[in-house]
Amino acid sequence: MCGIVGVLTFNNSHSSFTVTEKYLTRMRDTMVHRGPDGAGMWIAPDGKVGLAHRRLSIIDLSEAAAQPMCNEDATLWVSFNGEIYNHAEIRSELEKLGGHRWKTDHSDTEVILHAFEEWGIDCLHKFRGMFAIALWDARERELWLIRDRIGIKPLYYSIHNGRITFASEIKALLQDPDQKRAVHEEAFYHYLSFLTTPAPQTLFDGIKKLPGGTWLRIKEDGQIREHRYWDVWDHTTPLVGVSEAEIAEQLIAELRTAVKLRKLSDVPVGVFLSGGIDSSTNAALFSEEEGRPIKTFTIGYKGDYQTYQNEMHYAYQMAKAVGAEYHEHLLTIDDLLNFLPQMVYLQDEPIADPVCVPVYYVSKLARDNGVIVSQVGEGSDELFWGYPFWQTMLRLQRYDDLPLPRVLKYLGLGGLQVLGKAQKGYYEWLRRGADGVPIFWGGAEAFTEAQKQQLLSPRLRRTFANLTSWEVLKPIRQRFEEKAWEKSHLNWMSYLDLNLRLPELLLMRVDKMSMGVSLEGRVPFLDHKFVELAMSIPESIKTRNGNLKHILKKSVRGLIADELIDRKKQGFGVPVYEWFFERLGEKTKHELDSFCDQTDFLNKSEVMDLIEQGRGSQVWYLLNFALWWNKFIS
Image (cartoon, rainbow, N blue to C red; front, side, top):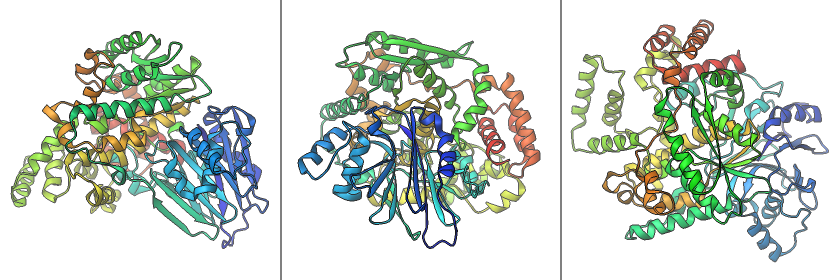
């Protein structure tokens, strides 16, 4: 796990810009937290291209594995963030083919170079891991930027002043003196829906993020080609007619492989443990064949916040069951308030999920106890129908399928408007049904379209009067309609979150917060082979008897205690609502009052109404944006 950065100057540019060591160092060293163990740089002799790297040493700790790294004749250079878990297998295949000279003992970075030499960009299909890769091909005079299939690792880029810059974090790009700082207002509009910005947009105008499963090829003359090299629907094998028992066996076997691969490390590895099914399964599988106790890490809250406390008992119970070395830490409102400035800095752009706070502190707890890599449980809920909210949405979508004339739905909308209910969620869901689009727009929605129109300033209300956030979901829906083997409502829900909420919200909170303390997070449930298997299971099996995670529970029964499997799901929450009635509320009101006076994004009276109504979660989303604007734009 590391931080990468680089630049390519186009040869058809009239700019006199030349890559210098000072320029790249300034960008690279904004990310020391991503790579405290070393730093490297390479600049082409003509000054047209440069790569730089901050290193967090995890696999092959030798100096020979430092980056940027080149092949035998220095015609390929790579700067790489992430892990290729099956690198030894690929290396063995390359050694049998012959023709490659190796300079490291077991570096996965070197495997990338020789795999690209052997198979070109198709080598990506052999990689099992998480990665953001920048590769310069001196023979073809082209730069490749690549993000892993699921989007676990971030990669940002900007094209301006006759060059393209790229980095693991936006703050590195902002060190380019010619990089403008301005709000992408359409991205802000969508942020108010999704708590994040859908790729390729970011909240910075002129800075983009590469979508998961996508590469860019940039020629030295500035020609750019973007290609989606992986889509889950291209790799599913429908498990129709296969028994539940057999599917459950396949799932646990594939998950066991995914966990085993993610144990690969030359430094200590641990497990984040909440006491739920996903993290408990991680802990149980991770402890298999271990010669010493594993380390687990759990976060809770001091005070009377029982809604958020109850899982700690289960986490301790699970740790005891596998003989783990158990660590826990209880957070207070002071921890949140003290962390806010650093949270905004680490996020780069708002990730309006308050779970960023416990993720940071559990990462710090692990790092403080000597662990540099930790397994996390993201992805299971999206693959296996794990959220109670999804039960509601699936039910609503089935109601919407009833053969009612669309005119009746519009009449229902009119009735709600007369009753003054146009701001409510059920009005929005009815509107979507009447418009003939899916009701489900993602596992996390902040404000409805009607609420956004009320919340925006008069200027932005006019600008976006005819826009809805369905526009950014249309390409995802089109791919779903073209490719999905079973076009069920649940498959749409899973596929949408695989393309938006997971890569741009949940996985970014893991990446940004864990890397903030120089710790790598690994995600077994989002191993691409496991995802492909999960998306091959019919909806009828995943939702059997209306039980959340039905087939996953069946597969792990016997591995973890029945009590953990059968208890009611409890989310990894944060007492934001309660803390708003303490000092968080005072700070928030002050920050948003000042922000509204200085800017023209929000309707101040509507913002103050939200605060007075105690709408803690929604106010938190606005606070994130205001703090970000103060840090990066103001």
